[in-house]
Image (cartoon, rainbow, N blue to C red; front, side, top):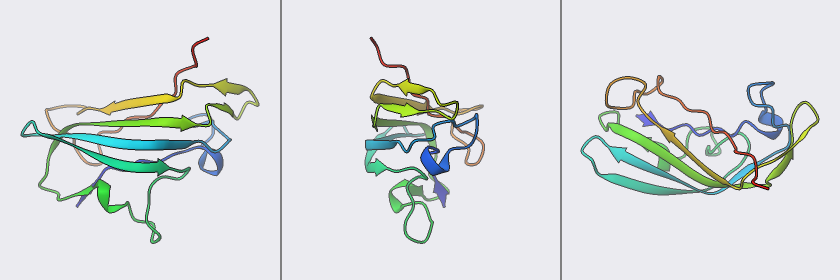
Length: 129
């Protein structure tokens, strides 16, 4: 079984300077669009992703992001809306973010994603003034 792990390292899940958002931020109305190696794509609604990530009550990744190990993907795109868009960082500064988030996971080498190898960090862009 392969899993797309989507972790929200904000609030109590913040990890120092790598993930410095000490206030909890929720990724609302999240969706994951996966492109399979045969060129087809599928979009899965993930709902709201709280700090910590999307896991069931046993701590396992939810079924909507689990796939048979023989299924191969060429990309994965996560779309979501940040809530709130203004939050505190570990250095006590406030960051005002654009509410729209989109991040694409691409293979680090070759043409398909490799479990446990290919990762991408989600970053928020500053709000436009």
